[in-house]
Length: 163
Picture 1 (cartoon, helix red, strand yellow):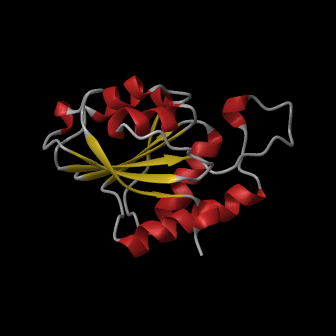
Picture 2 (cartoon, one colour):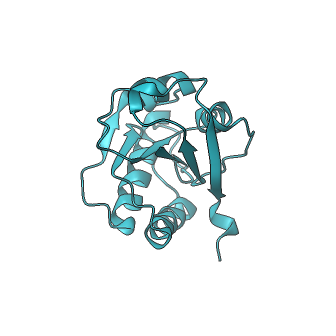
C-alpha cells in the first residue's frame, strides 16, 4: 500500500495585479495556514518521504513551509507539470517514482486537486486553500498507479476546521 497526501496551496495574494498568475505569493492567511498544515503532518505521524510541488510561487512557498514545520528533511522537488495540472499529470509523475517512497505529498492547484481526490477515491470533496487529503492507495508500486486505481480517503483536513 502507498499513501498519497494531496495538498492544495495556501491562500494567495491578489495585491499585485502586475504579477503573472505563476508568480503570485501567499497572503497573510496563507502564511498562517501553511505552517499549521505542516504541524498537523508532524502530529499525525504523516511526514512524507517525498514532497513534489508545482513551480508556482504560492505552491512552492506552501510546500517549503509545510516541509519545514512537519520535520521533513529532504529537498522539496519542483515540477512545472503540476502547474494547473489535471489528475493525469499528477498520476504520470507519480508513476515514475521509486518504490522506496511509501508516503508522497503533491502540492498543487484547483481544480486539479479536487479532481485528483475524486478520481482516486470516488468522493467529490471541496479542497479549500491549504486543504490536505490523505489517500490510501491499493498499490504496492508507484508504476501501478492509474486513473482507475481505487483509493480510500482516510482523512481530509481544512485549516479552518483545525482547533
